[in-house]
Amino acid sequence: MADMTLKQAQQLAQNARVRGDQVLILQDPSETQTAGGIVIPNRVAEEHRQWKGVVLATGPGKFEPTLGKRLPVDLSAGDRVRFTHYRGTYVDLGPGSFATDEKKSRFVVVPEEDVLMVLT
Image (cartoon, rainbow, N blue to C red; front, side, top):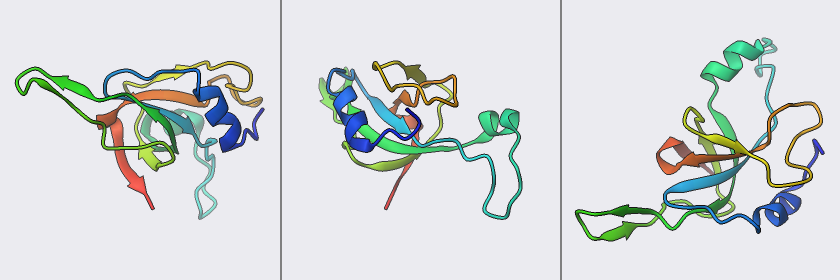
């Protein structure tokens, strides 16, 4: 299901509860060519790419023992973000999680600090 809509992804994500400061993101399909027409080899793309996607869910935040309280996640569902996935984990949320032309799930869970920016 390479052309999964945001609504379909949100329905799959409803059955997932994200923990701590983790963020569940629907990753945009891979870009294999730059705007100028340069083809990006898969190996280079995987190692150096900053991914784009849509936040589907966030955890309640990280508990900070020195303050004695939970620090809320500074993102919300629907935010378009750019992120790295060095510590992220691809997850299977059921039918449609995997794009037909890729072997990885399009759903990834990353720590909040791996989200580089919110796109407007």
